[in-house]
Amino acid sequence: MNKTYIEDEIVEKVDFSENPLSKGDYENCTFSNCNFASTDLTNINFTECKFEDCNLSMAKIAKTSFKNVKFKRCKLVGLHFDHINEFLFEVYFENCQLHLSSFFKLKMKKTIFKDSSLEEVDFTQTDLTQAIFDHCDLTKAIFDDTILEKADLRTAHHYSINPELNRIKKAKFSISGIIGLLEKYDIEVS
Image 1 (cartoon, one colour):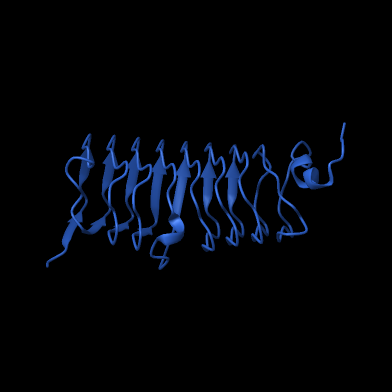
Image 2: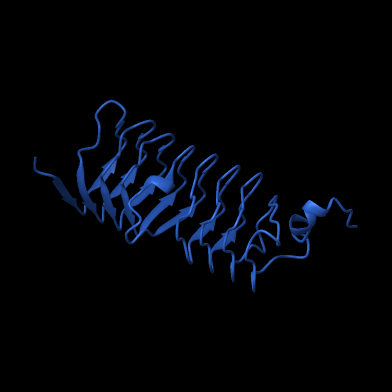
C-alpha cells in the first residue's frame, strides 16, 4: 500500500469526519477551518505543518508524528499526545483549547503555550524544561514528577504545583502566582 505524500498544500474548510484524511506524510501544509473531531489520524506524519481554526478534539493520534507543528486557535480536547510518535516531536500552541489532553512522559523542552486554556491537562512525568506558559489557564492541570526547570509561568494562572513532587529549579513565577506553589499547605496569603 503506497503512502500519500503531500507538500506545500493549503487545505481549507474540509470536514475530515466525513472524508478521512489519507494516511501518509504531510510536509509544510496548512489546514485551516477543518474538522478532525473524532477522526483517525493514526500513523500520519505532519512535518512543519500549521493547523489554524481547526477542531481536532478526540482525534486518534496513536503513532502520529508532529514535527515542528503549529496549532493556532484550535480545539484539541481529549487528545492523547502520550500515544504519538515521539521522534522529533515539536509543537507550538497559540489561542488553543487543550482541555483533558495528556502529555504523559513526553519530552517537551522549550515548548511554547501562548494564550491557551490547559484545563485538566496531564503533565505527569513530562519534561517541560524551559517551556513557556504565556497567559495560559492551568486550572486543575496535573503536575506530578514533572520537570519544570527554567520554565516560565510568570503570566500563567490557576496552576497548582507541588514543589516537593516536581523539579522547579530556576523556574519563573510571578508574585501573584506563588499561591499556586503553596496550595498544598492550605495556608492563607494576603
